[in-house]
Amino acid sequence: MDRGVVGTADRDRLVVAVRRYAMSAVVTPVGELDHHTADLLREPLDKLAEDAIPKVVVDCSHLDFCDSTGLNVLLGARLKAEAAGGGVHLAGMSPAVSRVFEITGADAVFTVHATLDDALKE
Image (cartoon, rainbow, N blue to C red):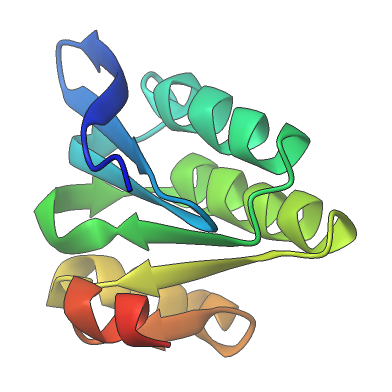
């Protein structure tokens, strides 16, 4: 099982790391997810959906901010993953990021885990 970082994308306010495993992947955005940085997360999530990775976990523990564009990227990734027979799980959301999901009701359509370890156990 390769646990190395296989892809990163970097712009001033967001870095996205992707770790692939046999049947899953962990995507870790670090920084601010908004209109200007959303493509940095969208691109690796789209690639994972194209590759039909059954389980994608987005580790939100280092995400400082998420606006509606970022939320739409995650919702789109969820739809693409489900169409390919997989799913997107969210883990480790800060209270500020979690609040965006609560206000919009998006938390009801994702499987949300308190920690990355919890997400990987299932």
